[in-house]
Image (cartoon, rainbow, N blue to C red; front, side):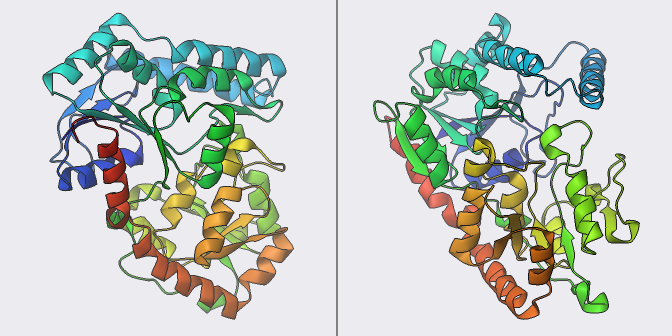
Length: 407
């Protein structure tokens, strides 16, 4: 079956999904929708070269300069705290609504030729509303090619000031209600979508979390650092551009953990952290590719999933972030603050691979309970094979083919 994979090429999902799709008989073309990163082959799957870079500019240098300018403006807004002003949030949301329907004719033509020349039978879009302009363009072409969307996160624009955006719901409606297939990462995600949109009138739905390939799973376990010093060590594998993204700025949480004498390990960042230096450690992420990151994680007592939130947000309740899904490959316990990450907590409890904690003192006490942590670790090790993309692909394969008229 000829499949067009629609996504940003910088998304790890691309290198995760395409090899599994191809090994199961799909002939895949990647339509890269990223406006800065362009490639002719995948880094972790170099034999795959059927890539169409939709927005590749005439001058890559100009595009990089635009991106650098945009990042500088974001940083300035964050420093002077303009990013959280209601007017800033309002204007950004209106821009997002516009951008959902904004795509140039030359890009529509590229999409049309890709669908026609490669005789595409189904479009698989990952991972959320970021690919809506391209999905809308495909729908507008009226070529009767089914589109399946994998929904890992929603809503994308959720403000610390006003919560989730009703504008985003409205801009999402036209797309969501006209998809042939919708893959929801969690039960909570499906319930939210079903309550906010009319899913029953058109298309099919399935709940299936975004599994990672077994190639990212650990292959050997390192000795626990805590066996040497009898102090708890946890690892954080999320975004470390703390000063640029409000919800990712967990520096205050890191300081709080270090004050409680919990060792926190995370990827190198230029941002100033503060806290008790002895308990704060940085590692070089670029050296950890494929399953090497999972192997590296096995030396820690647990992986902590954190965002800079102190109340419930729709996005974090119903979504399964990549930092959580990838942690499932490491075979170590996963811990989250209690009450904020309902979808994550459901999976943690289902497999018995960790817990949600109430405050850092509770976290430390439970990390120091070696018997309980050993049980969680054993369960996490056993769970790795159960949550691989290869083991669960049959369900996705069946779903994709169920929305295709010829299948």
